[in-house]
Image 1 (tube, rainbow, N blue to C red):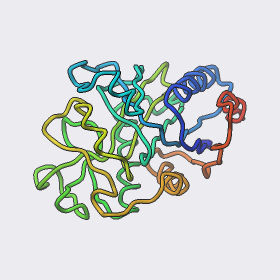
Image 2: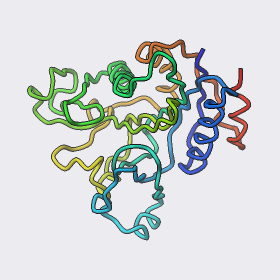
Image 3: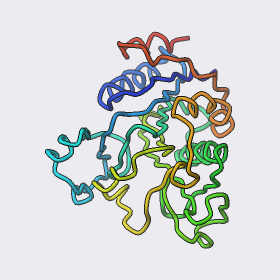
Image 4: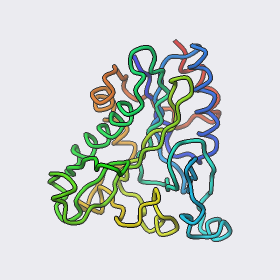
Length: 247
């Protein structure tokens, strides 16, 4: 059984540190598979493929607006995390029979598609563009990029694998402040905008609500049993998550 933990709202760096600790513990088989569900305080993250020209504001301006800047080891370019966005970080050992990066990334995308559907948005993947997309002109329908009138990205994916153990994951915009995307070229994509469940439908669940109902959707997409999310939002020391994730 994959343990799901709800962390509430957290700054990026402490969660990044605990992800690394969990990854090492999973590689050493000291813990079982675990999934972290949370929302971040405002932060712009730079992945391994990030181009500095895709960061459109100086760090001093970001700081003045309460937005952190973090360099991270995930794949991908520049992205934004903030309140109103469901973030999912699976720490999974894909060995022995799931050692397929593309299959894993597709599963993360499928999870976001299933969650979006729960709240009235049909979404899908687009060839050559990582993440999950919807049609802003017809959010209740998705027949593919060729039929979309105005594509917007509602979900981002960035992963890192170490000896087939995963970290990082996906971020799905529920009621995110989309104006913060003005400080970046999201994932290096200039031709399409960014959307959220709220911007497409006028309403969205809280991140806690979406996290609380995500377990069966994660299980379906990943093909793994995922337990109901345990509330760890009041946990002061995230280092305790390593012991809480053990068998």
